[in-house]
Image (cartoon, rainbow, N blue to C red):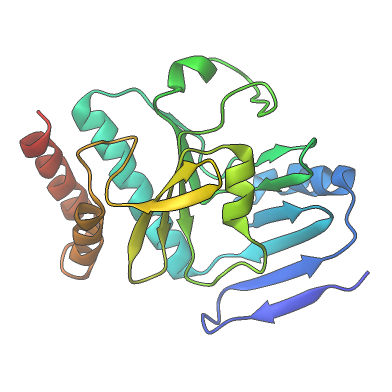
Length: 214
């Protein structure tokens, strides 16, 4: 077995590629790393990638997560926040750890469950994907096979909203989970990060939601 350690231009973010990994080994590693949420796993038909996200990666992940949570609170929507919960299916031999994931529309279907099985239960309604340093594996293809209806992707400069259709994801200018929320709104929120501190930014998001929804 050969491990490949790659360093990107973001020097604090590395990833390791492990070929010829059995499903059982992947699941054992995923279970072992549950106490280390800074690690992100991607598994695709025997290839396992372990990523160690950077400071910027984690910061943008948390900001976007807080935006989602503040929107649901302001709008009186229920939500089940599952962070980087491993989303996988053995029958597909694929799985990954989102940066953040949420049940919103399907929250009532999984609320109160101690364990979620994506072969039976619906997938999360929304995933956040921070892609400042690209994965070596096609994570969007895995999201599509798992059936996640919406993914927000941020590359460090531009945020995009992706909707699942029959043959994969297509770009959209607005969210499924929050129908009045457009890509330009998310972009504006993130650009405020350079002038507003975190709580002030979230306060702005709440004011935006109140003026546009309530």
